[in-house]
Image 1 (cartoon, rainbow, N blue to C red):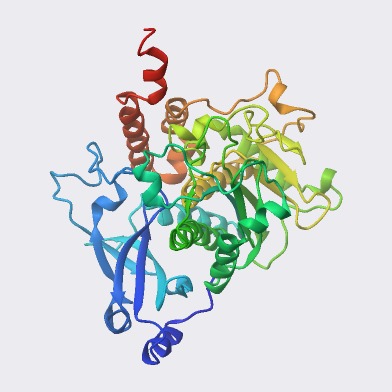
Image 2: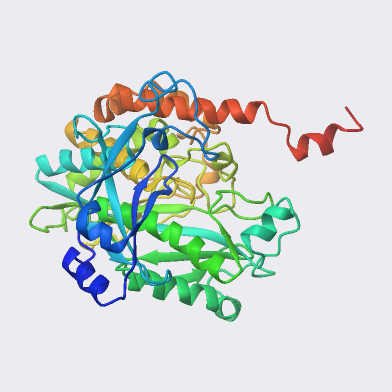
Length: 455
């Protein structure tokens, strides 16, 4: 789906002095934008065709460490180049950065010009192509939650991330008066994203002090993942420009609710017919939707890593916090991992509530689609919906409790290996292993406070 801003529009803006910088960005394993700032004249002369980047960008951790153990890239192989191929359908102005446009790039092998299989955008595109070959496409929407702080990023870092001051002193879920106080930042986010070609629906206060949510219009899976990546970067940049800080950490504080990224999904025909809707079916669910949701549930543990990729992600799964603990489905029930929404309408969809705000949208969307496609291909039967408080459910499917457990499920998944390829799963298995290894050797404040005197 195009942002409606074209290379000809860019040429005109450059010629008339409105744009002088173009950000050419790829998306890394963590879902962050990585790339270069081009002088706009050079971009429209040459770089719109391709540019280059070091291949370590899809083999690092949060700290940009050159992690050992990857097959695709290493010191031994010399850390060569990948080709970045701008996808001009993603070209857009960035209103919150003066004189700036942005384009997202596919990552290609420098020699063969084939897409790099473990690059996040390529992983999602592969699942989108599988659907297209079946005569279908996915529409998705991700709701993003985050916490807003009155300190800047620099001040938060200087304080060791202690004694941070939230933008609100109390739970502000749907609270108009409190969110009025935060409107300088949130209005800038809404209008900025809208101006960047991302149709914004609303923002709202969320279920803890200082917690916000931004919602944008659904789109096809790839366009929505692109939007999601730009939204996260944009929210941080806009907050920073106003001396504030935002975190998308899934669980920033024990006493606060976690931040989620709920993912709504439905399948449509290429002719725009809603394939999940059947007015004769129970709740309006078609047999195809039954199969798809059954696939999500059958492979729920296997795909959890792509919804919760860090140690911290699993701190969010706490009963009574609106974050799920059970991978079951239910009808309009926010205690379940998968919630049926829009029943009896053509907007019927399944909402995955497992993912945190720290997920990579391309990987999360791809994993969900792969699981759903498997359910369709194997005509899996859907279990009965759960009724009641899922937190107290006994003998039902649980979400993996740790990164270690989720990584094991992922690496042993025959479905994911078939859908993504062995090399891709081995690549992300190594990412998960490294994250766990780094955590296992660290000393936390909690350990010191608990054991300094009493151990």
